[in-house]
Amino acid sequence: MVRRKTSSNSEALPDWNYEEKVAEIEKIIAQIESGNLELEAVFDQFANAVEYLQQCETFLQQRQKQVNLLIETLSDE
Image 1 (spheres, rainbow, N blue to C red):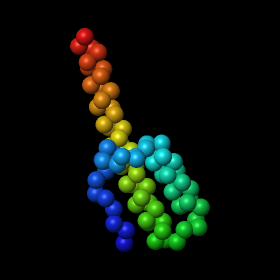
Image 2 (image 1 turned 90 degrees about the horizontal axis):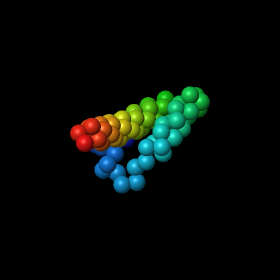
Image 3 (image 1 turned 30 degrees about the horizontal axis):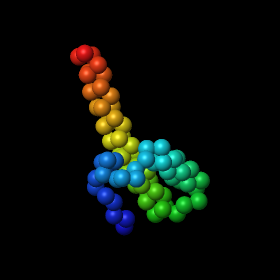
């Protein structure tokens, strides 16, 4: 069984890149859709894709908070 990090905080990963994760998710989807993977590999790849999606969602939520704060700062001036 594959062990996964429980943290989905993209900030904890210094080389983390949103666009690269999206590309990796798309690659995983293509592999799954190809039908060439064994069932165990499908589940492992799906779990990886879910983890990457969670990291992306966390990243976007953090950036949305920053944008909201900046907008609020501009509105206060």
